[in-house]
Length: 259
Length: 117
Image (cartoon, rainbow over all chains, first blue to last red):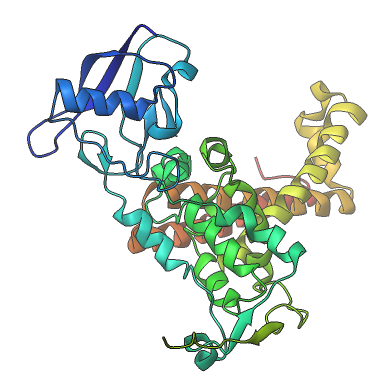
């Protein structure tokens, strides 16, 4: 592979007035990802490039950024798939820039936390100290499965036009997670979440642009989750439990024998 | 009012508006040729039919509620402060009341033979 022209948007909010572009020539190789190129630039050409990464295998969601104008994971995007020409790396939209390609995801995680992304049980004692494992049917799992693949990379939120204009909008990630727990038959906190979403800047502000689903690297369809969620928000009731979901447990949990 | 109720109103008025505006356009563009449909005398004659006057009043309410509620939604996306939301919501209600009242006045006057010159 020939040389790769990597253009990185540089911006330090404490020093710079506006972002600037810097170009680096990277020796290309087969299978090179944008993250590989960025790390080469940082390690051998310019130590001051700031970027966030961890697993290098699209599992941790740390290296989300805008590559050639589209939100992607740098570790999951090969240079070759970008069709030649320059590779442009920019920070994700809709998030404050900490430095260069590193964005502040605090508001993103805060909105995720607001959706109470955990199982809520009416029997608080059971929730604290489960006596057995909660079961769900395969068809029930099917409803939530794709939403459990979310790695919280923030790409969907960075591509959302509503998040760009409405800072109180929870965003596609948080809404999809709210849906994920509301339809989970083991959960009993659906109404609490629905109440949270039924306000002026809640679930109704989604314009169904679908860009969130388009950019998700894990194949999650947050736009679908949001549309399905609206049905429950409109009725104010979480899906009816038929008594076979949350109540079917396996044998009681036993503690592991002491060695 | 909960946002879901307001959105239900928005969806219901959208569906109703499609039906009502379609009938209205057929009446004004097909049954009566458009060039004559908007003449002053022809418009007044339309109101002589009580059912059609009621239809136009319903159309007025549906379109105004849908339109102003839509503007409320857009304005609420501009800024997210509580005072802004309060003012926008209050302004929307006021705008609907004023415009429906003014439109209703026109309908009533037309039913009784038109506004005084």
